[in-house]
Image (tube, rainbow, N blue to C red; front, side, top):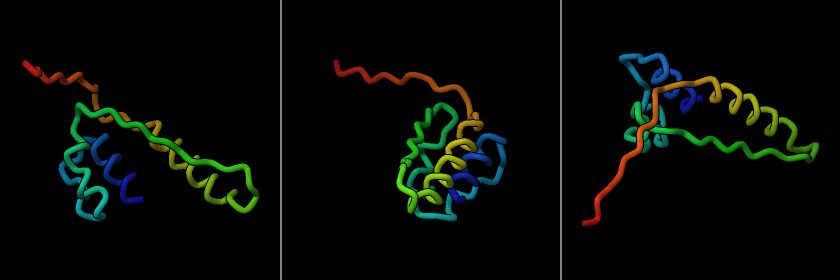
Length: 80
């Protein structure tokens, strides 16, 4: 839930964002700026033994879909 906590804090423009609660969010801190676009891929399975993981991934994806951090902007680099 740490990734969700960070994204939720960013979408609510909270002054305190828990980046240091996990290594992943700490490493991706620079990627959580207001002009970043996220792509979340959910891995799902039709196997009965994977039902719990699939349901959990779909619930998380559903929560992430509702998050709006800001408007993504296009950044270009001049090679000249």
